[in-house]
Amino acid sequence: MEIGSLIEGRANSEIISCNVDTPVREAVALLASKRIGAVPVVEAGKVVGIFSERDVIYRLADEGDACLSRPLGEVMTAPAITVQRTTSVLEALALMTRRRIRHLPVVDGEAMCGFISIGDLVKARLDEIEHEAEAMRAYIQTA
Image (cartoon, rainbow, N blue to C red; front, side):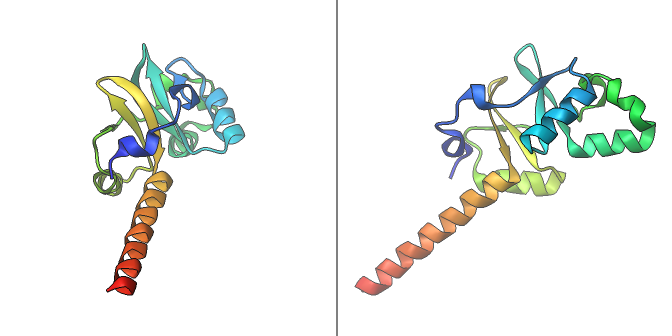
């Protein structure tokens, strides 16, 4: 299964993102209000980084609450690790495991067309395994 099938039907307008000038305080409030763990950081329509809960923790530990006034462009994780629509779910899961990340922007060229989490990928993989198991059960019953 490819990533493209996971994001099919999701509108680009549904992707919650921030720009490089967004203050950390504002981004933290957005993460909390939407109950999400990360947002892509976009500049001129291109994904330039990711801002996640981990970024908040690391900056607070290093700088204290002074970091809350800084723009995301100074504190985000960059460059963003991205995948294409044609990337398989298993490839994306392997990438996330290898790089120890939990979110991936999906890009078409340089334009972001989706944003997926490890939860999205695990759910897709479990659905795929369940479908395969059901097909096996049906085959065994008819054999």
